[in-house]
Length: 200
Image 1 (cartoon, rainbow, N blue to C red):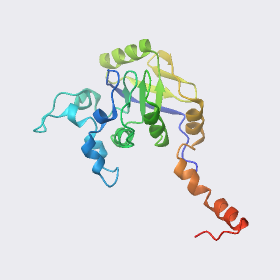
Image 2: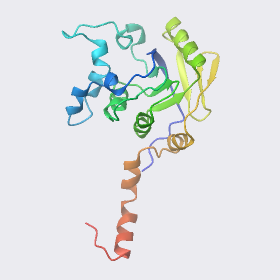
Image 3: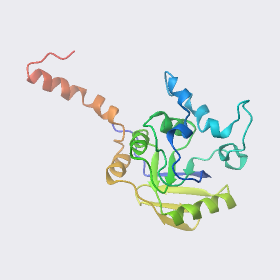
Image 4: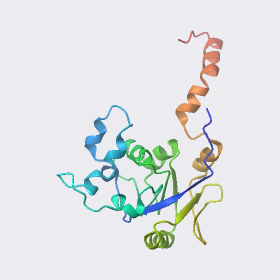
């Protein structure tokens, strides 16, 4: 079942500089006990945002200047570590629709794409300039253009890439493999009958 095509994402951004931000930092392991993903937003970067008594550590996600941001900007190998689907789920459920980084861990990237969470890579120079621009003007709107393969910030445009398979999936609306499988149930049943099986 095709979902709405994602051609671009627009929104303000929050800078999360640093390389090798792993999935345990994105969503601590204790949140993996959840039955559904519904409440994962509260665990996003929890141990980096709050101390043991729940007091704020002054993390960028809690900076009021970036409230309502929809785009994360980070460094290289974002989402490395254990292959927990909870990491992109927590990002998406916190209201983010795109991550701009220098590179992504492969499994994180795949899990994010199936959620429609757009992940694009930019050069180290572009990443630094984007972070500087957002820090200078937190109200700056970024446009992550999947179709054009670029990130726009004000009058500046930066080349951005993602694998062609992910790009095509987002642009066609076929980025959810479970949805595709469910859409094909009638054909699967017909093929099973053709082969002499009686599907349930």
